[in-house]
View 1 (spheres, rainbow, N blue to C red):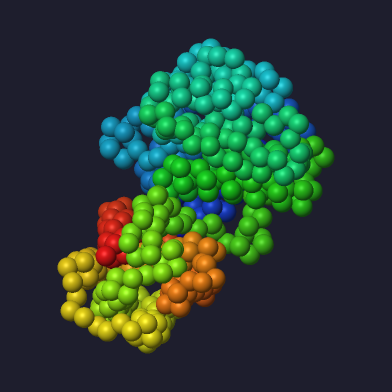
View 2: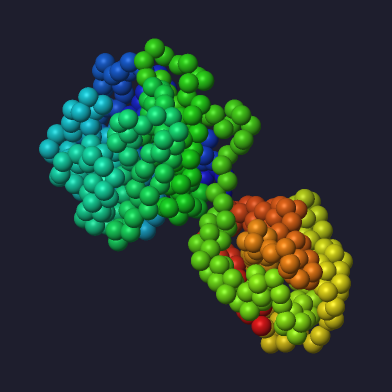
Length: 488
């Protein structure tokens, strides 16, 4: 959902490249409404920090109370804290939210080690930071910070990142995004940087991104953690939010040299996407669900119909059974596409109404031409076809977003199967096999499937969590119906 409130608790940077100023730009660029609570005022620019003023912690508590009692954030990003007293004040505010059952998602960027390698927090503050992690969902240390938090040597390779991040995740039961930016000695433009994301259970995912050769890296840690908090606030889970945030920062780094700000290490280009007209990044929630089903979708390759198509020759009896039931199914599917069109129109979505209506026309007029040309006739629906029809009816009754999720696999799976079969289609493949494969491998059909997914992504982003879960289940159940349909 665009415009969700996201709170940054951090220090300021009057030159605009890091701290609160970077956070607010990032939050806006990633689709959130930025709010801020200041923990410290700095005198700094692109050449460095010359002075720091820490307001009384009583004033910090007043800032927190003012924001949290009026505009409850969907996520909080925590950056520079500086002392045990400041850290404990923030922890107490989070504890109060937990006690009331309203604590939002929290991302902690542990600002602990200066670029020079000097420790920024004393022993009491480091101990307080560990206490704070009991109230945090995800922490984003770089390699030096991870070494401190894990009470070990600074990691020197990705394997070290994984080992220490797993220990930290286990100790505090938090997600850990361990950043690999300090491990890039010798890399040149076009090389790959690897961050690692660890779940509280220790599951690891590598998050690769291109190495950008630039000296304008001021505020990268602030920006990444703010982007993570914003994408999570909008509804992405931590793996998806991480991928989105890393991609956002990579784009901001790639355009950093265009700004030409300051005479030292300049800032990344937080607003590059907006200034270029690309807009706020889409979450792609439904695309993520489909990606999670990829292994199951590939199971369609083992079904009787797809195996026969891959061989280049299909037994007439099998193909007529499949094509006939598909004709029966398309009649019902077209009616549900009409229902989706009407629901889109009721929402004032003219483009969506037109898209679903056009898809219904294809189901009634164009796709049946293929089937009838191959000799199929409409039979009585069998148990598999009836079960699929019943599932679509249930999805339709659950509302427009759930219906669209249920309709999606018929687009996406056919496009994927067609794309996989086409490159290996034998020259002597039977005419009916060639007709089927070329129909569903057509780039035009792939474009339609992609548009259907994009529309579902938009619906998922605007849906509440309960509706999203119904959408996800409806998509998965339709995929199972599709697989059964191919396995005659």
